[in-house]
Image (cartoon, rainbow, N blue to C red):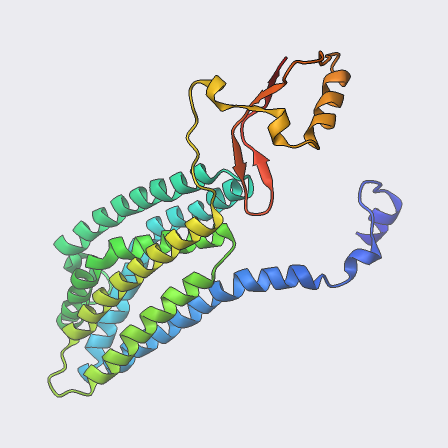
Length: 302
């Protein structure tokens, strides 16, 4: 490959200066990827706490939970794939300065994911035994798995919103709130569950009740954090007037530095500015976090 590039390929060259580590880019990658990776570590701790709480209920309880959690993961895959698409769409529009499209992406994906989760919740409520029967013939294992699916499926909608918020944070380039919400769920779930498991009247239903409560709490926290992120990083919506004359802004008001550039552009296009005439521009401007961006095409009238 190296010989081919050196002898035959003229469009690809090797620049040794580019081999140097770009620490600034490494920092950006770590800032985005590390919190997202930390979420998987939190998921491991979450599962470990559940197995610890189920240790006294026997092998059938742990087997039923294991089968049920795997089926729950399969159920969540369609909503998870929908949520992951939101990150790419939101990231492209955020980079383009299209704040309205970012908000619309969140609304559309949230509604679609909620509809999918409601459908799977109904399936899990009506016939979990028939699905679990293909993985185990032990009645006690099926009973534990069916109870798990019936109860935990009640927070599928909340889990879907968590997926959407996590993907939106990745699209906006800030994944720290994802780690914060996941950490809050782990703390509010693990500590009470470990305390309850030491009680003599501890039942397996307590594990699922606490899971429903903490998942709902995480969904609410994620939505609140995403709302704060929208307020901080997205431009407020500016109404677009159908009457373009109402949105006309004098070039004189846009700053003296723009006038010479505009005059030169008119001269290059064969136009001229007559003395005493006021050049008007019909535009709709959004101020992005880092730079001004002109959303609509500018039209100049002499």
